[in-house]
Amino acid sequence: MDYDVLVPGNYFCDVIFTGMPSFPELGAEIYCQDLHVVPGGMLNTVVAMKRLGLRVGWAGALGSDFFSRFIREWAIEEGLSLDLVSQGEAPLRRVTVALPLHSERAFVSYVDPAPDPVELAHRHMKKRRIRHLHFSGLVVDGRLPDLLRECKAGAVEVSMDCQHREQTLEDPLLREILGLLDLFMPNAVEARRLTGRADVDGAAQDLGKIVPTLVIKEGDRGARCWQGEHCYHAPALPVTVTDTTGAGDVFNAAFIAARLAGADPLVCLQQGTVAGSLSTQRAGGANSAPDRAALQRALVLHTELLAGSPGKANPGNF
Image 1 (cartoon, rainbow, N blue to C red):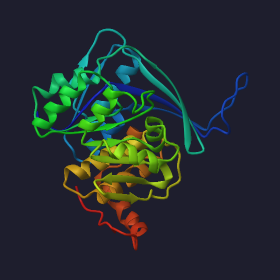
Image 2: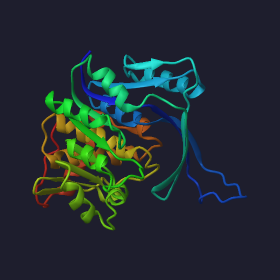
Image 3: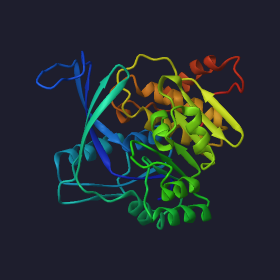
Image 4: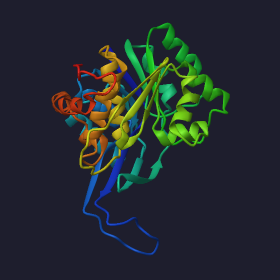
């Protein structure tokens, strides 16, 4: 089977406590209003892409543990293809506890060793035709430049999110990898950390010299995209926020879906920000990612926010 997008990586199972009155303190106990156990990590993007009509291939692994079984059952109910997912006999636990409060969140995670995304991408790209390769986090690996050059030779676009990483642009390998991407999609905090800049504009200036298309997600401020000499902005859709976990992953899915449909950067931004905004209304990105119909309805409302601004966008279709 061929795919529009290949997403190599390993699942997370998110345990999300919502409605906390305050942040927990050592030696004290608080009670939240609700509890959710949902797929997380790169599955936020995979599920969102599938709901938006893309043929998406998840290349990953599952184990024999409770969390792997939960993810397998959920994926089958969601209609995700597991053709590229290996099944191991040992536990493969990848769990995050998320504590959202006032539009921010803290995480505690545990992971068992698992196949790395470069290995997974190499393994499956040789056997199938794809249009786009997406990494859900920053991958700094000496094998990656050769893979990215193979993608360019085969006319396969490559995008990468960031997530929390300790590397900075002082790392030559990191700079080489970013320069071989087609699309880099950090959030504002990640962009500032990578560049050492105190402001997003400065970070964008540094990253824009390396990456052909740069997208920086700025939460309730929306997102911006730098491409060549142009900078585009789309505001977020005003919503009542329950949980921001996975919103950036859902943004990525909608932006890439629009890009693959040939939309211009402003339309891609609009669809990304709307999808990301919608996903914050429930707990977990995979749990709350909109389908095409829900996204199109919200895009009509979002277009009104752009009325009168430079580069007014039509919501478009994909």
